[in-house]
Image 1 (cartoon, one colour):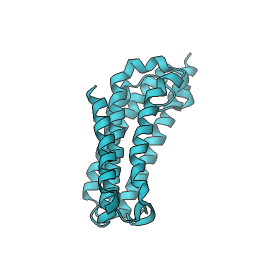
Image 2: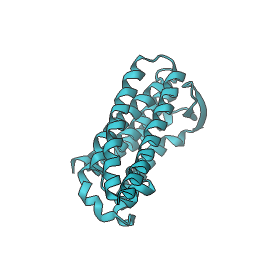
Image 3: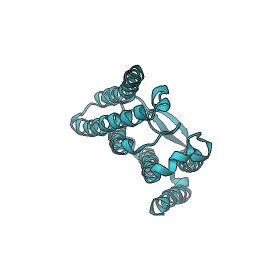
Image 4: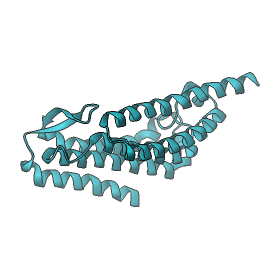
Length: 215
């Protein structure tokens, strides 16, 4: 219940702030930054409501997953873990909303490359810590043909990916703190994303082949 209350605090807090200070926003607000951390696209100030709408959609999406997933019965087996994931997603969206508000009035105050790298590093660390607790499903985790077809492959892949994502996230945070170039931070971000996404997929394939060949 505590985690559910946090959602409502974030959602209604965003809506209330948006309504109270909407008239103070410029007509065009920043919505995209390039690899150098510079704003390169703007949208109508109505866009300030998008993060709250997206937050609500994520809430609805998480609520219906177990009803549309063929392996929906497994969701009860990692219910607490799923709640922590939801909370992390909600806080991530909230942080993006705060960044947008700050950028509306002082674009130079926030280094977007720095902030995104830190936020993503934190998300990877949290997800890595939770991954070994994931049970087989079609929406959350390393969903390759090999993990979904073999319970052992799923379990071992998520143990491996959990360690990789956890330490990868910490490494991203540490290195980001010492880098001054926005371009270097984004290069680090993209390289890390590729490694964390590709390595578990390759591992699951190799593991699946090894297990099936020994049967």
